[in-house]
Length: 154
Image 1 (cartoon, rainbow, N blue to C red):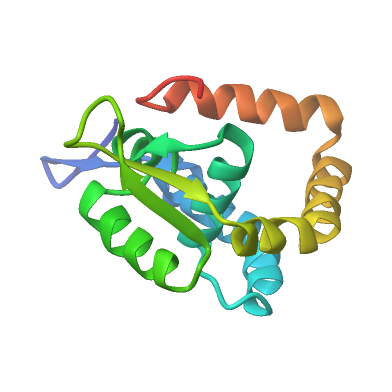
Image 2 (cartoon, rainbow, N blue to C red):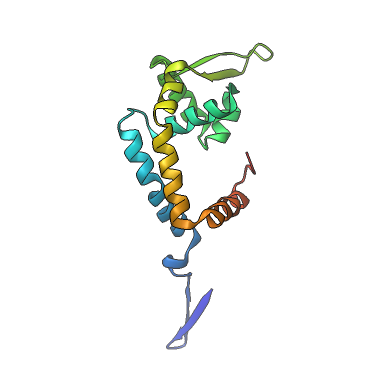
């Protein structure tokens, strides 16, 4: 923290917002999400729904707690979202065979169709980020950000 004296009073200053990690992460998130939002505008699904579909497509069926954690969503928000996505035919949900208290969510064919139909566009977005940062710095950035992830590497 930087301190300066003004007329005998010490004034404390936080780091400049231009060098503040929270501010930098928010600005970077907006830069990263812009192209993704553009892609999703044509799909009729939200960023959060995209995350849910991507995780289910990649990991297969998951219980709702694991899915909420991996999608960085609060469990009540995921519950409401999955209900709406189930009604749209994007996912299915059923009680776990081993623990009746748990819901298991699976991507439905219509949800997988959204992933598949946006595959090339999503790859282009990734290629653009890698071109901007360079392959090594792109991978290093992901590694550094994972170090700040309270849930660790997923």
